[in-house]
Length: 400
Image (cartoon, rainbow, N blue to C red):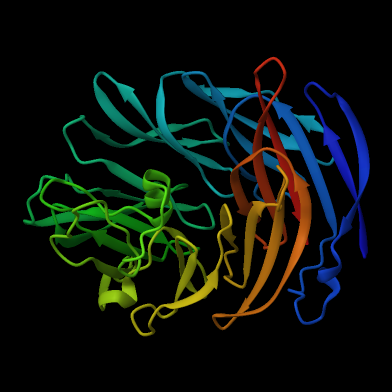
């Protein structure tokens, strides 16, 4: 058995600091299964209130940044999980917010809000308090999608299809913005008007993987295996690779995938099923990783030159991947309990070379998980409820 003494920091209702000893399971010392992840410290921090997302604060190994739900608006807060201290909540948006993303590193926030019947995509710069309108549209326009690069310095914006039931050729932009300078780089894509689009940038935002899926003439779009199981209560045994389809669904066109090099404007289309990476998780240094039901797939760099490979089978609730692509973390319910455990997996050249249980006994529903920028910390965000009905957020941090 391996013993780790972990500081348990509780605030809010508890208002006290305690500690506990965590006993790691025996298999972590099994040389054949060991993933080589040496857990050095574990912290838990609880506070009352609702949270949209959280991340490590850039250039800090002690503080986390938290995007707080303020009713109809947004608030920003930092917490030192080692000292048990919190900053005041800085409310920076009081209008209703439909969707938001906190950048890795916590220096920026992207969100959509409403102003004079227009939907605005806004960049909030935490250090200066500036708010910059990036994109504006009315409700009749295509949905605006956005996603951060892994290092939190750049973000991508693109339009989703309009699901009109037509398959006309459509020119649409994939836009990259530098969050600090505001510099915009745009590549025009020739795709299909009637499309469901995904895009995921690599760690520094120099490249982006783009995927189009096409609905049927009634506008039905592909759904993931997890969504199929939730909707129908049974597994679909006739799935095509990477997608499940609702009753009577026949795609009007096969899906297409590309990799874009933003600095040179180079566009490379990826052949057929090799590019079919569903439910994108991360574009790592090793390649693009995504999940379809119990299957975790990887398409290695350079994209378009290697076929995708299935690297893992799992029915866990959450899958998280580090930026280097060599560590995968699985979060799942412990058998016969209401608590969760964390499994660490080591990947080398697209092959699993070790796995181990890192921690057990996490309470609540898992609402988010993230690896620190230097691949040395794992943040798990869970939600529970107090006796008065208020939300209780808990942060579990593993240093390794």
